[in-house]
Image 1 (cartoon, helix red, strand yellow):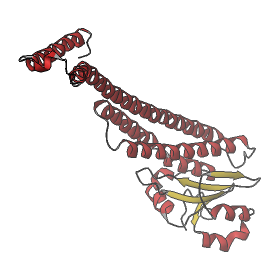
Image 2 (cartoon, one colour):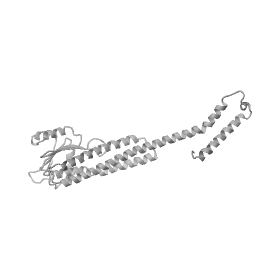
Image 3 (cartoon, one colour):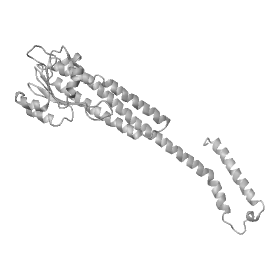
Image 4 (cartoon, one colour):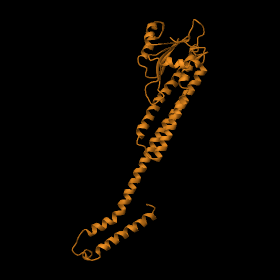
Length: 292
């Protein structure tokens, strides 16, 4: 067991336990059936509000390239105490590192709010890191199309989609807690409102990054189209360049009996000069039209 923010020797504000310990004491929790159902599979952040408690689950995404959850736990908050239920020990170790920032708190809801605030404290820097990576990818595309573009862009899209869902769920929790008449458990309603606005700003930042990723794909497609258009332009110029020579070759390849150039001593040389003249005239024409 772990306790923080103790008001008196006989009262604690935070208790951390695993599911086995919770099952032993479940009869002391009024809504343990709903809570046990939520703990069965923690897939997202959610909250349910009852007359005498607020319960739910939290799934905090990994703030790295890995996609495993950093922390997944359940919470059960009453007017007197906050219970956190986890299996891995991650939340307990994290709280031990944050113990200095969780001191001198006066209520369970303040403790839970401070805990959530600490979990998103560095999120803006994390999102700015992604923004910088997107800008670097944009510069790489402008210079030359990278071979790992689709792998990188897919990673961006998946992670931002995960963060978008996470902030959406957290904002829903904040709105739900504020909108419910549970003032006895929420003496810090204004702080919850500020927390929700902060979550919404992070959510908007993720939307901004998602739009940047979409623009990145459009830039990639534009660069690909421009590259293909350039190739087609070169092929068209080459085809046009040799079209008169192809006509000349086909003309004298007919080998009719009465073609005087075939028996003429200077016929071969004349055709060479004519072909060279045609090439020179084409080069002059293409340069004048700025095709070359």
